[in-house]
Length: 112
Length: 112
Image (cartoon, rainbow over all chains, first blue to last red; front, side, top):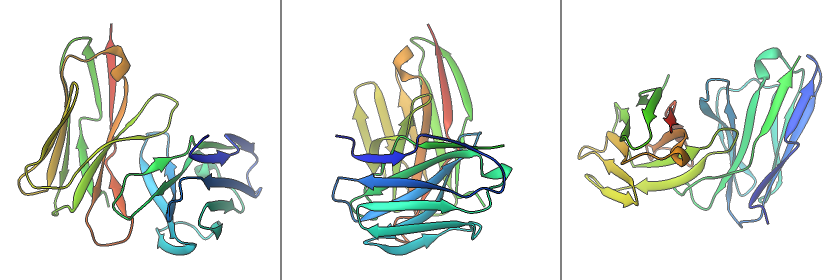
């Protein structure tokens, strides 16, 4: 069983479209995250939710909207996609705020 | 701005040589974590260091946390081709729930 699973693994879309990435964790963790990894491998936190409550909202365009229907799920919706949104998006979870992160396999988004 | 400086960005070694990556912060850290990301994969947790001056070993990997809790290093003895990947440090300043600052990573290539 995959601990943190995200879908889809690959997304290729045109500029201006809207897309969603889904994430689910079966570890019973309280905290979930979205990270963005650019082409230079830089990992940057975007959002963090603890028990469905938004905790961290980094300087991310408001075209990005996370939604946590329950503490096992954290989805990411992106409106009006731009070329610069092309990246690998990783979902992660942790038991505590200082605990290790468990990452999903990533969703590679390519905006044409 | 970047919270944690990690060097070098790239390292190419012959199999059997040693490898070290360093992380430095201008502020005192609550703890530091290390992750490994294989090419095409997702970051995987290696270890967490919490105490000042802490040294931990995992087989050929040695992790250190500085006395002032502002720097850390990962040393690999006698590298193997399986060590290939990007190594990230992730620093927790203890100020906000779940806010880990990732270094830019060191991409290690090991030539057989």
